[in-house]
Length: 444
Image (cartoon, rainbow, N blue to C red; front, side):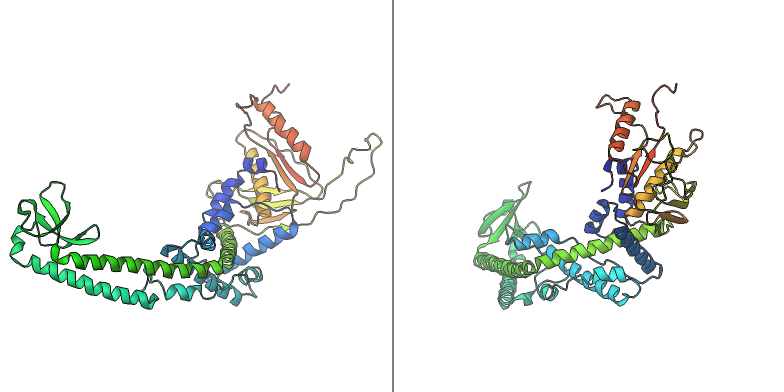
């Protein structure tokens, strides 16, 4: 794993934020925000190939998308723990499985063009039976259908009949001579029971049960005695309906629980593809290119000079790394104003000293170099015209004002502390970036 402090100094976290902004759903965003550069060349090449294939897809307007996928792993876990899932979870699960099937079909159809993406897509599982079960249970708003069970259909039919009888009885009162004692001719509910608004000064004119009164006390909400039994029956049918709905949702939750692990793996694969698509969209937005990874060269070490110590590398020794980036653009600067930098080191060069006036771009060049290396090793294309790099085992940076008030360190002391830390970990396959070495102290 690359040095975390140096990644922070290089502002790689801001690059992750930018990439995450191109993700289509939360699981993909989480992967983007956790993006970590690899130190393995084969892994880096594979990630770059994935990004390249996705860029190719989007450039050809193939219509490949993540679709309506949602992160339903928590819902799957809840079902596996025996909870009854709410309707919105089932709708999200249905959308995720359908999106996974569509994406799998699209990418497998394009397998010759995008073999790396197809290799991930083929792992998206079908989760058979769940989509059809949800479709036959819930409508598009997440309401349980009458047809979900014979008992539910029967209960709801009885509900409608009783409801109609209640409405008829109350409507007859509204149309009778009692209308003169009503605040207005409407039927409403209080506490789940159907009532009508009686003027408070007409109390006693209508036999019934008072369930509520208005804030001013001028209106009483009364359930007429003639509808009490019907309201009781209606309330009983509502409770019976809810019991049946819970039973249906419990069965559906058990079905999800049976394939909970498969469902979570679907989300994992969709998130993996979402991250790749986000990398590709970021590459397109920044007009980036795919870097070429060059293996570490074997170098012929020249004979030692007579005055060199045995444990000291020969003065002409080169570790075998490659850094060659044409017109690199710092990805966090305004692309309309950023000045491209050529980071092209000759084969024999492995130490570069940058000098020049203040505001001349020295620090930006260092940060650009560091970001190019870690972005390449994280599978990101580079905002440059051309790039060839080795895969570094680590990237270290000491850049910017490191003064630490908490630790009572001066700027110079903080820089030295960081450099000592770097020296304790560095090897000949590391990229090291030092900005204003020795700043914060007397130059004499």
